[in-house]
Structures are given as C-alpha cells and as structure tokens.
Length: 359
Image 1 (cartoon, rainbow, N blue to C red):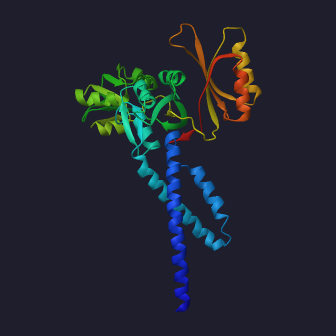
Image 2 (tube, rainbow, N blue to C red; image 1 turned 135 degrees about the horizontal axis):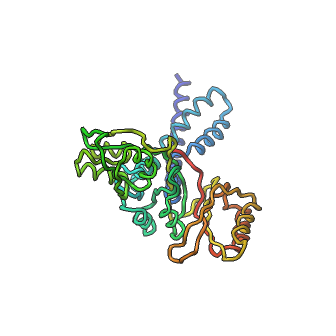
Image 3 (cartoon, rainbow, N blue to C red; image 1 turned 30 degrees about the horizontal axis):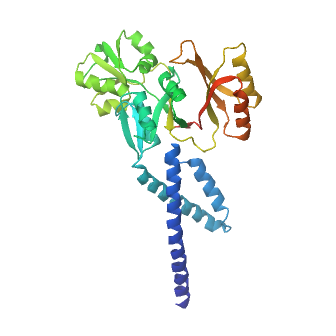
C-alpha cells in the first residue's frame, strides 16, 4: 500500500510540473501563431512536426517508452494546432470572387479556420491587405495551361506586399447548368477569361458562344439567376453545388494536368528559409544589360526557373522582368548577388520567398 501511495505522490508532483509546462507551451504556441499570422503561413507544418518528433523522441532512451512518447508528443502538437485554429478564427483572408471561386477554395484549404473575405477583383483584395482591412490575401499568380495572371503579377511588382507562400491547386473545370438542363442544348457559356482559355477546345468543338465574367463562381451564380436551360457556366463543382446547379460534363479543360498556383500575400516578409525566391527587376536601356543581369544571377549559383517580361503600365515601352530562382536570396551570398545586380538594374525587388506546397 505504501508503494502505490508513493507512486501516486510522484505522479501528482509530476502532473503539477506538467500542468505548468503545458501552460508555458501553450503560451509559446500563441507566439508561434502570431508569427504564422504575420508571415502568412498555414498552421500545419508537417516538416517541422517531423523534426520535433525526431529530436524529442531521441531523448527517450527506453525504446518501449519511446514509442509511447511519440504518441504523446503527437497528441500535444495536435492540441497546439487546435488552439492555433481557434486563434485563427479572427484572421481575415482576402480573396477575389465569391463563394465557390477557385481562390475561395484555395484560401479555405490553406487557412481552414480563418474568416474568408470576398472582394470583387484582384486589386481590391490586394488593397484590403495593404490598408490593414485584412491580414492576408490569397490570389492566383499562374495557371499551368493559360499562363501567368498578369494583373496579380503587376500588383506584386508595384505594391508593398510580399509573397510568403505559394500553393498549387488542381483545377477541374466543368460545364454546369440549371437543374434538368441538357448539355447538348447549351448554346452559351459564361466564365472567367482564363477558364474560357483552358476550355477553348471544348468550346470550339461544341460551337458555343462565350460571355466573359469576372469570376467562375459569379458565372455560376449568374446562370442560376438567369434560369435558362440554354445557358451554362464553366466553374468548379463546388460552385455548382452552392448555387443549385447540375454538373452537365466534368473536366472539360483541355489539359488533364490543370493546376493554378495561388500566392499568399502579407505585409511582412517571411523569415522562413525557403527554396524559391521571386525577383522582379528592370534594366537600363543599354546593350547587354539584361544579359549581364542574368550572368550575375548565375554567377552566384542561382538557377532561374522562370523569366518573363511585363510592360510597366504607367511608362510606355518600358518593361520589368519577373524571375523565379532556385534558392533563398535572404542569405549572405544572396545579398552580395543583389548588390552586384543593382549595378545593372534600374529597379530591383525581392518580392518574396516560398516553398511550393500542394493543396
């Protein structure tokens, strides 16, 4: 009897210490959440969790205990994530479009517990973060078939926000119509210009007239409002469900591998170490200036995975370049490279760093 009482006394003392440590851990978890909020990072970080489990479990020498400890630390991290999800409910994330838009779907998957705020276009969603009306924005920057989303790229170049993450979402475009509609009777389709591009072959094959709308979900809602069996929309199946429409034909986009990359935009540059940097710059009108800039980037070991030119909107016949580099420029070597690059560039901006993640 004395033995069990002694054991229980030890457990009570340990539990008292663990309760204090639990409070300290949850307070630290709040600090982690604030960092993630400011840097536009999702709550779940599987790589970080794997490191925590590995490092902590190695401290438990007893192999039998170690297996139980791994379960224990996983439960602790799950509780921490639940608490951070609770805190995230106050975070406002701007997106372009309405419920059912692909940006709405992406924002919901990246920040499942945040307050998602709808804006009519890319510019207003971007400005909402600049003014502090929202904490973050989730906007598309490129589609694997239709190419870059030029308006958003221009906003990143001219604006003050930083890209803190890029997430890849598989996009399946569908022909949707009102209940009871026959796909063979559809004469007109409404959708966003990029969705229409992605489905251009299907549209041509079926001799459909097109009407552009600012967003795929808005197109779906418009079809529901018109209630005309000869008018369809190209949208996600999620949008069709929201607005009471039927999916008349699935996956009508030309490419079977149709993905859109969505950027998370924040007022604060992330301090995370990432594997890709976004560099935007313009060069002087001198022979070989662009070649010199490219050579400097390569000289310091940065491989360019993308290089595109864009017109500067308020300066006729002037262009800037959008480049994606393998590697993080927020290093000592990267800073040296940027200083040397500045000798040949009229403007230069590191628009952010990221590690691509799939949704």
